[in-house]
Image (tube, rainbow, N blue to C red; front, side, top):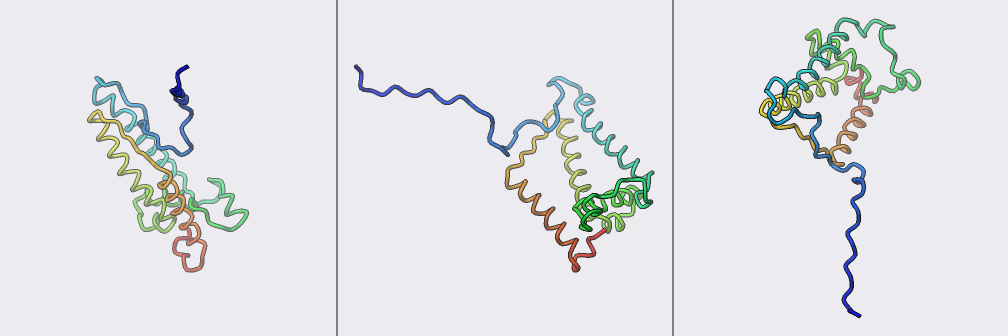
Amino acid sequence: MDATPTPKPAPAPGPPPPFAPVRAPLFPTAPAGASRLRRTAVPVGVLAAVVGAFGYVATVDPNQPGHYPVCPLLRFTGIYCPGCGGLRSAHAFAHGDLAAAFGANALAVVGYGIFAVLWAVWLIREARGKPLRITLRPVHWWAIGAVLLLFTVIRNLPFGSALAP
């Protein structure tokens, strides 16, 4: 008998751990030899959907009661959630009133800016044939959650009433 131990086989790869960073493109990309028009079709389609949504909110005024449902958290608890005032913010933003948009929901206006930058980067990368890869690690998700929680708490306290819609 041989005294050398036999190596154990490597464990079979299992599912990735929860909150593992995903290295896949955010949206599917066009094949390698595709034209620039075909490569940029998805980012342009996403922008068309966003413009359509903002166009609808610009047309149907959220300041008039009965057009949109009431925030359930505000209705049942009286607490403003991070999204409260978001439709009024989008309405004001679509009409070019940045001060009113910021007053309705400052975090939403920051989100519009982040979306615009990410969309422009996505369009440029797709036009060049490089997919957009966004890797969010657990610390990023915790930071986003902390910002949302902090915004929610501050806008519901007396000294943060300027952030309330």
